[in-house]
Amino acid sequence: MVSALDAKHAVYVGSFDPMSLGHEDIVRRGAAMYERVTVGIGINPEKRPLFSCEERLELVRMVLAPYKNVSIESFDGLAVDFVRRCKGALMLRGLRTLTDIEMEFTTCLANRVLAPDIETVFLMAGEKYAHISSTLIKQIAQMGHHNSAEKLRAFVPEPFIQPLIDKFARRTQ
Image (cartoon, helix red, strand yellow):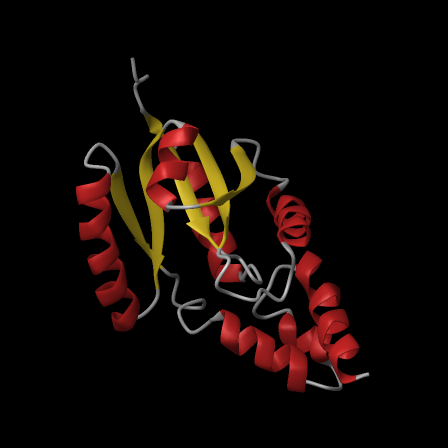
């Protein structure tokens, strides 16, 4: 017998490579709305992440430690399967741009076929986070040179700043 999914448990999945202030904002808002939020760090074998899964887990746990109803795990495979394993009834998604809306709409329709018992809840990015992307963050870390830390502070949570700078410093040596 399959156990019931928890309607008070939302699951927020992503690569978080790196985590942005926008991601943290979605988690903060989700944690205020739901009794429990699980952040799932996805492992995509077709991508070469900047941070290893273990590094992302450690850094994201540092960032989200203040949120007592939030847990962090890694997963591979389909997001809806991870949500079901977590017993969550809701998949939390953040939207930044019209491009995000189109992509998320398509993904949501596929997820409804794969897991009709899991609802998707969309939260619009806060206006000060809508422009942030992992590509932008990586460009700033790579090309910011002097004052990279200060520049990154506007885009990523504090625990990610030095590790980002260190990753790109190693690449240029």
